[in-house]
Length: 293
Image (cartoon, rainbow, N blue to C red; front, side, top):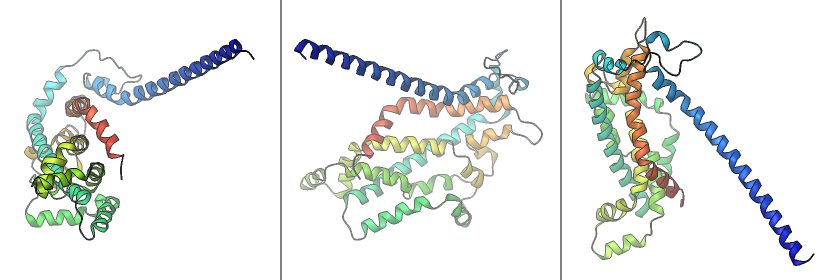
């Protein structure tokens, strides 16, 4: 085979490979698009139902475009329940719990990742083992403890526990990120006179912003959407959070589905907005925390 034939054969092989690659990419895009549309259907149905009359929500086949469009469903939410009060309660509980979880989890993770002390690895294994304990197993002892402390029908059970450790999963996540940071940073800071807490606050935390962003997003979603804990510990309607407050639209005889859907849209909107704004930090933090164990 001469040089010209070899060049033609190589070009044909590259052309076939390029065609096969484009076909594979096209199939992949179709699969991803199909999955995205499938996952978007519940959200689209929620938005559509929030703009319908009560009688048109469950008609078959579904009416995706409301006719007529009932924008007043959103204003009626504020007339039926103290929705702004519930919103403020949720902001307070979520904000304080997220701050406490970030501080406590990052500090505990710093100890496991950067400090050397007897039994460190054994304590870390014990900490990880608590992830396997179902929450419902400790529910009754925790409830009895909070009752003895006089914390029932207050926000203390929804906030204070998250200032005392931050959760085993988040400690593990942050420790994984801290482990990839060079230990020479700590040594250089100590030479400059920094204390252990100074290293944590001035050196480690600024470097760990991607991982802290991941923890902040997870904790925000958990506390913002939490229904079970407010249901257990809150009794006064004025103290309800959003997840518990919108349940008031469900009655014994009937449920105001259109108002419930409108309230759900307003509850879901901050979560979608947060993820849209922090998506870059979320992906970056997930990638970095998996580099070194």
